Picture: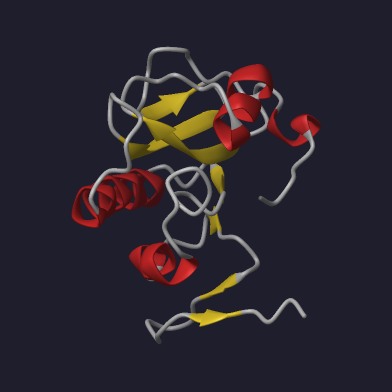
Length: 138
């Protein structure tokens, strides 16, 4: 997980921490816990804008991974929201690649049409609708 300072997401900053969640909104670990503790995420709310955070479901109510097509639908809704809310900068974590156990190659292409106000994980390199290239971290 990329680590951000909680100072980046203070109220009124316009910076939105975008994290993977579960549909129950139990933000108990990883990026979701950071969002709950520092970015205004609401316990019990598994989707949408909450304070200086945006929850993107990658797991269901029973904390099982959602099917990729369902995650993709949530991602598309988020990208539409981001496109319509250019006053915000959305710092997107590598949703679904941690506790939901999907790979970057499965998730990153969902963001190929992300608007300019979405800051994507450095390990995802998506340019001009070309296929995903993973950044070699060795």
